[in-house]
Amino acid sequence: MGETIVITSGKGGVGKTTATANIGAGLALLGHKVALVDADIGLRNLDVVLGLENRIVYDLVDVAHGHCRLKQALIRDKRFEGLYLLPAAQTKDKTAVNPEQMREICQELKKEFDYVIVDCPAGIEQGFRNAIAGADRAIVVTTPEVAAVRDADRVIGLLEAAGLNEPKLVINRLRPKMVRQGDMMDIEDILDILAVDLLGVVPEDERIIVSTNRGEPIVQERNSLAAEAFRNISRRILGEPVPLLDLESNGNLLVRLRKMLGLG
Amino acid sequence: MGAGQGAMVQIPGVRPERKTILIERTLRSGQSLFYDGNVVILGDVNPGAEVTATGDVIVIGTLRGTVHAGAGGDEGALVVAFRLEPTQLRIANHVSRPPEGMTPSGQPEVARIKDGMVIIEALGFRL
Ligand SMILES: Nc1ncnc2c1ncn2[C@@H]1O[C@H](COP(=O)(O)OP(=O)(O)OP(=O)(O)O)[C@@H](O)[C@H]1O
Ligand SMILES: [Mg+2]
Image (cartoon, rainbow over all chains, first blue to last red; front, side, top):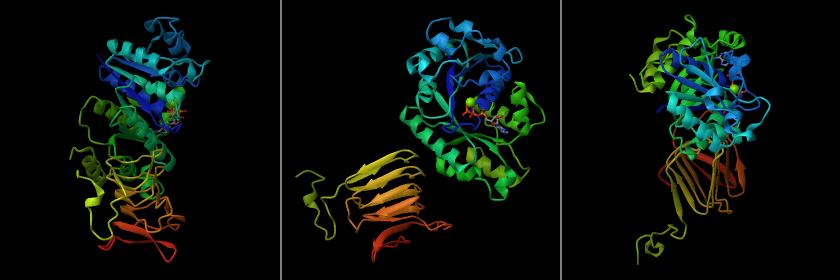
C-alpha cells in the first residue's frame, strides 16, 4: 500500500504545480511508481506542465462520477518510467467532486502506486478540503514573502485541525542575493514562524519557466540547482538524510542548514 | 472542600475568582481565542492569530499576532511575552502598535497601562 501526499500552500502561484510535477518525476526517476492527481478542477495546469494535455480523454470528475474506470483516466508519462497523471476537469468547478470521492480515489490509487501526489488548488475552501481528504501527509510550499508565509501558517493550522500533523515545508524561489542584501526573508526567519521541518529549498531559476512552458519537468536536468533541489527533495521524501544544497557556495550557510535538518 | 476551590487562596492581591486557561500549542494565522479570564500560552502567537482575554495574557513564546488583554475593561490587565512583537496590542480600551521600524528587544517584556498609556518594559520581578 502506497501513501498519499498533498502539496498545498494557501497562497496561489508559489509553485505547488511545479513542485508536484518535479517531485513526482523525481520519485519516478528513483524507481517508484507515482500517480499525480490534479485537484485544481477548473484551472488544471499539471497536464500542461507535464506536457500531457493532448492525451487527456477522461478526468478526475469522470472517475468520481463513475463515467469511466480509474485506469482509463490515468495517463502514462512515457519519459518517466512509472509516472502517471490523473488530470483535473477543465470545464467543471471545485464542487464537481466531494472529499469522500477524493478519499476513495486516493485509496484506490494507493493500491497500485507507491506514491500518490495531489496538487492542491490555491485557497482554503472546498478545493483545498477535497485535495487534503485522502492525504496521509502534507507538503506546504511557500516563497520567502511575508504574505506567502502567512498563508502557509494558516494552512498548517488547517492541516493540523484535519489531523495532518507535522507537514513538511518547501521554500521555493529563494534568491540568495536578495537574502544577503536583507531584501528577502531568510530560511531562519521563515522556520522561526512556521516551526515545521524543512524538506527543501528551491532557488529561483529561470529555467523552471522555460521547462514549464515546454512541458518538461526540470528535475532531470544536470546543471540546474533547482533541478538538484527537487531531486534532493524526492530523496528526502524516501527518508534519505540528504543535506540541504549550498545555494551560494558559502560553507557557513551549509553548516547552519544541516543543523536545522537535524543532520549535523 | 476539593482542590481548585478558590476560597482556599488567601494571599493578598490574588484573585481566586479569575480563571486561567493553559494553551499548550502555537496559535497560527487565522486561529483566534477568546477567554473570560487569564490566558497562558505555551507556544507562539503567530502573525494573523488573535488572543482576547478579560484578564492577563501570558505567552511563553513569541507573540507576533494581535492580543487584547483586559477585554472587559480591566485597565490593570497585563500582556507578558517571552518575545513581545505584536502586530497590535490592546489593553482594556487602549489600542497600540509597535512604532514603525522598531527592532525587537530580544528579551521577555511586559505591557501594561501606566498614566493612561500602554507602556512596554523589560520583564522584572514586580509584575
Ligand atoms: N523556483 C522557481 N524559479 C522560477 N520560477 C518558478 C519557480 N517555481 C515556480 N516558478 C514559476 O512560477 C509560476 C507559478 O508556479 P506554479 O504554477 O507551480 O504555482 P502554483 O502554486 O501551482 O499556482 P496556483 O496556485 O495558481 O495553482 C510558474 O510560472 C512557474 O514556472
Ligand atoms: Mg497550481
